[in-house]
Image 1: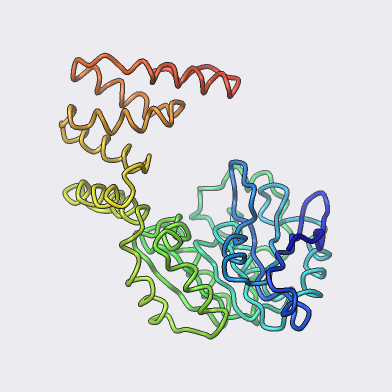
Image 2: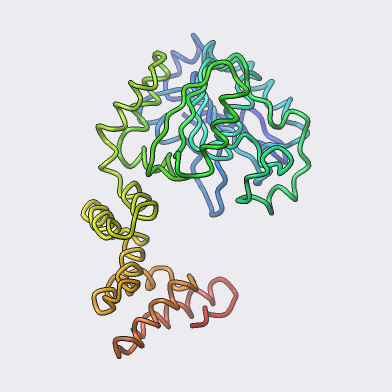
Length: 333
């Protein structure tokens, strides 16, 4: 049910998603979500499809930009959320949204947080090991609460131990009394996508909302489903040794034959091991769909040269079309 924004300013919106009006009137909103960092145009708030499908009354907190929620009016926004949520609500976020979930949960009395690959902070002073969002961090005026984790909430923190995300998870666990850590090799920073593709994320969120599962119980839910995620196999291929890479990529493509980055990765791998003719159809598929990806285009053209193949005219045309739409020049070879 569409309702006016619960809170709106130049920097923040709180979008209500009312799926069960009768229950809302009796208790309040039971789920709060924070947006991750979206670099493209994201039309639906994070978590909206889950809340709609499972008839969960939710508040979706949507920032105007990628400032890691460092806004002067954040207190006013959180006060509006606190006045509307149910006792013992659950908060969910991924990456930048996961940072907000573990940091701000106490502001509106959440009992549980689900944080998917969250940051402890992106301030270099607090996380000297973290280079990934250096440009964003330079542009942010951090408020004094940055780097402080909510103390009255049970945090379910998901991270891949083979990525820098595990360093953030360790800092979160060191700075809060009740943290359930869930490690998933192959989750990557895309751990939320992996769990969603596998059908595990919705199961875990509903279970956390209803009870307080142990780490072992959550791991069991993941283990039963994770092999169904194409992104998981892509991540495992990228993380694993070269001799297992092809098998992992082909397993992912069995699940999603049209996955652009699995196609690109398999084509690139076959190129590296000298199987250029086999690589060409995978690279062609990927480059036609990502004609401005410079490294991909270069690899494709190099393989064409190696195999004596005339580059597909559609690649050049697609690159020119995409460049024109973007107002720039086509990606050079």
